[in-house]
Amino acid sequence: MDSMARPVVHNDSLRQDLLAVTADLVDRDGPARVNLRDVAAAAGTSTTAVYSLFGGKSQLLTAVVDDGFRSFRDSQVAAAPGGLRGLGAAYRTWALEHRALYRLMFGGALAAYVDCQPSPDAATDAMEPLMEAVASAQSAGTVLQAPVEMVAVAIWGQVHGLVSLELAQVGPPDADWAAAYNAALDAVARGWAA
Image 1 (cartoon, rainbow, N blue to C red):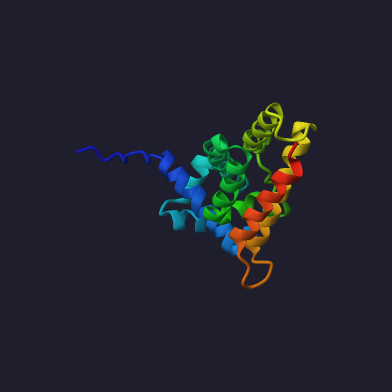
Image 2: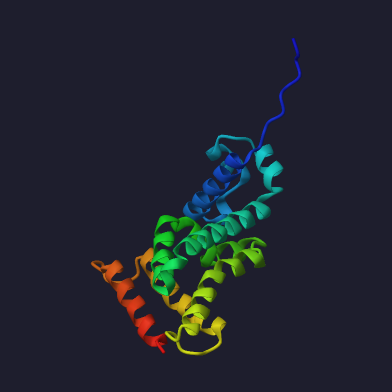
Protein backbone atom coordinates (compact mmCIF):
# COMPACT_ATOMS: atom_id res chain seq x y z
CA MET A 1 0.00 0.00 0.00
CA ASP A 2 1.36 3.41 -1.00
CA SER A 3 1.37 5.82 1.94
CA MET A 4 2.29 8.90 -0.06
CA ALA A 5 -0.33 11.63 0.00
CA ARG A 6 -1.85 12.61 -3.28
CA PRO A 7 -1.05 16.13 -4.42
CA VAL A 8 -3.91 18.55 -4.07
CA VAL A 9 -5.19 19.74 -7.41
CA HIS A 10 -5.93 23.45 -7.54
CA ASN A 11 -8.08 23.65 -10.65
CA ASP A 12 -9.95 26.43 -12.40
CA SER A 13 -13.16 25.54 -10.57
CA LEU A 14 -11.49 26.20 -7.21
CA ARG A 15 -9.94 29.37 -8.61
CA GLN A 16 -13.37 30.64 -9.68
CA ASP A 17 -14.87 29.71 -6.29
CA LEU A 18 -12.13 31.66 -4.51
CA LEU A 19 -12.69 34.71 -6.73
CA ALA A 20 -16.45 34.68 -6.08
CA VAL A 21 -16.09 34.12 -2.34
CA THR A 22 -13.51 36.90 -2.07
CA ALA A 23 -15.73 39.37 -3.93
CA ASP A 24 -18.65 38.58 -1.63
CA LEU A 25 -16.57 38.78 1.56
CA VAL A 26 -14.90 42.06 0.59
CA ASP A 27 -18.27 43.52 -0.42
CA ARG A 28 -19.87 42.42 2.87
CA ASP A 29 -17.04 43.07 5.35
CA GLY A 30 -14.71 45.50 3.59
CA PRO A 31 -11.19 44.72 2.43
CA ALA A 32 -9.49 45.39 5.77
CA ARG A 33 -11.52 42.70 7.56
CA VAL A 34 -11.08 39.95 4.99
CA ASN A 35 -8.20 37.55 5.51
CA LEU A 36 -7.06 34.56 3.51
CA ARG A 37 -8.15 32.14 6.23
CA ASP A 38 -11.74 33.39 5.93
CA VAL A 39 -11.60 33.21 2.14
CA ALA A 40 -10.27 29.65 2.21
CA ALA A 41 -12.86 28.54 4.78
CA ALA A 42 -15.73 30.06 2.80
CA ALA A 43 -14.53 28.25 -0.34
CA GLY A 44 -14.03 24.96 1.53
CA THR A 45 -10.28 24.83 0.94
CA SER A 46 -7.00 25.71 2.63
CA THR A 47 -4.94 28.87 2.72
CA THR A 48 -2.26 26.84 0.95
CA ALA A 49 -4.58 26.64 -2.05
CA VAL A 50 -5.06 30.41 -2.01
CA TYR A 51 -1.31 31.02 -1.88
CA SER A 52 -0.71 28.40 -4.55
CA LEU A 53 -3.24 29.91 -6.96
CA PHE A 54 -2.74 33.63 -6.28
CA GLY A 55 0.35 34.28 -4.20
CA GLY A 56 -1.16 36.45 -1.48
CA LYS A 57 -3.98 38.80 -0.56
CA SER A 58 -2.98 41.65 -2.87
CA GLN A 59 -2.68 39.30 -5.85
CA LEU A 60 -6.00 37.64 -4.96
CA LEU A 61 -7.79 40.99 -4.80
CA THR A 62 -6.25 42.07 -8.11
CA ALA A 63 -7.38 38.77 -9.65
CA VAL A 64 -10.92 39.39 -8.38
CA VAL A 65 -11.03 42.82 -10.02
CA ASP A 66 -9.46 41.56 -13.26
CA ASP A 67 -11.92 38.66 -13.37
CA GLY A 68 -14.76 41.13 -12.91
CA PHE A 69 -13.57 43.20 -15.86
CA ARG A 70 -13.25 40.06 -18.00
CA SER A 71 -16.76 38.94 -17.09
CA PHE A 72 -18.10 42.42 -17.80
CA ARG A 73 -16.31 42.49 -21.15
CA ASP A 74 -17.74 39.10 -22.09
CA SER A 75 -21.26 40.40 -21.41
CA GLN A 76 -20.56 43.48 -23.53
CA VAL A 77 -19.19 41.38 -26.40
CA ALA A 78 -22.35 39.24 -26.28
CA ALA A 79 -24.51 42.39 -26.37
CA ALA A 80 -22.52 44.14 -29.12
CA PRO A 81 -24.82 43.03 -31.98
CA GLY A 82 -27.52 45.18 -30.31
CA GLY A 83 -25.42 48.30 -30.86
CA LEU A 84 -25.12 51.07 -28.31
CA ARG A 85 -28.59 50.42 -26.88
CA GLY A 86 -27.81 46.71 -26.44
CA LEU A 87 -24.53 47.54 -24.70
CA GLY A 88 -26.32 49.96 -22.39
CA ALA A 89 -28.94 47.39 -21.42
CA ALA A 90 -26.27 44.73 -20.87
CA TYR A 91 -24.29 47.13 -18.66
CA ARG A 92 -27.13 47.43 -16.14
CA THR A 93 -28.02 43.75 -16.32
CA TRP A 94 -24.43 42.70 -15.60
CA ALA A 95 -24.10 45.17 -12.72
CA LEU A 96 -27.33 43.95 -11.10
CA GLU A 97 -26.27 40.31 -11.47
CA HIS A 98 -22.74 40.99 -10.13
CA ARG A 99 -23.32 43.65 -7.49
CA ALA A 100 -20.31 42.75 -5.34
CA LEU A 101 -17.95 42.67 -8.30
CA TYR A 102 -19.31 45.93 -9.68
CA ARG A 103 -18.74 47.70 -6.38
CA LEU A 104 -15.23 46.27 -6.12
CA MET A 105 -14.35 47.22 -9.68
CA PHE A 106 -15.60 50.78 -9.47
CA GLY A 107 -15.86 51.63 -5.77
CA GLY A 108 -12.20 52.33 -5.13
CA ALA A 109 -12.26 50.62 -1.71
CA LEU A 110 -9.58 48.12 -2.64
CA ALA A 111 -7.13 50.67 -4.00
CA ALA A 112 -7.47 52.70 -0.81
CA TYR A 113 -6.65 49.67 1.31
CA VAL A 114 -4.07 47.66 -0.61
CA ASP A 115 -2.06 47.96 -3.81
CA CYS A 116 -4.89 46.67 -5.97
CA GLN A 117 -5.68 48.18 -9.33
CA PRO A 118 -7.07 46.33 -12.31
CA SER A 119 -4.48 45.19 -14.78
CA PRO A 120 -4.38 47.86 -17.50
CA ASP A 121 -5.29 45.35 -20.21
CA ALA A 122 -8.32 44.05 -18.29
CA ALA A 123 -9.83 47.52 -17.85
CA THR A 124 -8.99 48.62 -21.41
CA ASP A 125 -10.36 45.42 -22.95
CA ALA A 126 -13.64 45.94 -21.08
CA MET A 127 -14.17 49.21 -22.93
CA GLU A 128 -13.40 47.87 -26.42
CA PRO A 129 -16.97 46.77 -27.30
CA LEU A 130 -18.24 50.28 -26.53
CA MET A 131 -15.45 51.91 -28.52
CA GLU A 132 -16.20 49.63 -31.47
CA ALA A 133 -19.93 50.38 -31.26
CA VAL A 134 -19.29 54.13 -31.20
CA ALA A 135 -16.95 53.88 -34.21
CA SER A 136 -19.48 51.76 -36.08
CA ALA A 137 -22.33 54.17 -35.33
CA GLN A 138 -20.17 57.09 -36.46
CA SER A 139 -19.36 55.26 -39.71
CA ALA A 140 -23.07 54.68 -40.23
CA GLY A 141 -23.74 58.39 -39.64
CA THR A 142 -25.98 57.85 -36.60
CA VAL A 143 -23.62 59.26 -33.94
CA LEU A 144 -21.95 62.67 -33.93
CA GLN A 145 -18.42 62.82 -35.25
CA ALA A 146 -16.07 63.36 -32.32
CA PRO A 147 -13.11 61.43 -30.97
CA VAL A 148 -14.33 57.87 -30.40
CA GLU A 149 -12.69 57.58 -27.00
CA MET A 150 -14.29 60.82 -25.79
CA VAL A 151 -17.77 59.72 -26.89
CA ALA A 152 -17.31 56.26 -25.36
CA VAL A 153 -16.10 57.63 -22.02
CA ALA A 154 -18.97 60.14 -21.90
CA ILE A 155 -21.55 57.41 -22.60
CA TRP A 156 -19.94 55.04 -20.09
CA GLY A 157 -19.98 57.76 -17.44
CA GLN A 158 -23.66 58.45 -17.96
CA VAL A 159 -24.80 54.83 -17.65
CA HIS A 160 -22.30 54.12 -14.87
CA GLY A 161 -23.63 56.99 -12.79
CA LEU A 162 -27.22 55.83 -12.89
CA VAL A 163 -26.34 52.18 -12.22
CA SER A 164 -24.16 53.24 -9.29
CA LEU A 165 -27.03 55.25 -7.82
CA GLU A 166 -29.35 52.28 -8.21
CA LEU A 167 -26.96 49.89 -6.50
CA ALA A 168 -26.42 52.36 -3.66
CA GLN A 169 -30.20 52.91 -3.44
CA VAL A 170 -29.68 56.66 -3.55
CA GLY A 171 -32.87 58.25 -4.73
CA PRO A 172 -36.57 58.23 -4.02
CA PRO A 173 -37.68 55.13 -2.09
CA ASP A 174 -40.19 54.24 -4.79
CA ALA A 175 -37.85 54.88 -7.73
CA ASP A 176 -38.51 52.84 -10.85
CA TRP A 177 -34.86 52.25 -11.71
CA ALA A 178 -35.59 50.30 -14.88
CA ALA A 179 -37.73 53.13 -16.24
CA ALA A 180 -35.17 55.76 -15.22
CA TYR A 181 -32.40 53.76 -16.87
CA ASN A 182 -34.34 53.34 -20.11
CA ALA A 183 -35.10 57.06 -20.12
CA ALA A 184 -31.40 57.75 -19.62
CA LEU A 185 -30.48 55.46 -22.53
CA ASP A 186 -33.00 57.34 -24.69
CA ALA A 187 -31.45 60.66 -23.61
CA VAL A 188 -27.93 59.40 -24.35
CA ALA A 189 -29.03 58.29 -27.81
CA ARG A 190 -30.67 61.68 -28.52
CA GLY A 191 -27.68 63.57 -27.14
CA TRP A 192 -25.19 61.83 -29.43
CA ALA A 193 -27.42 61.47 -32.50
CA ALA A 194 -25.95 62.86 -35.70
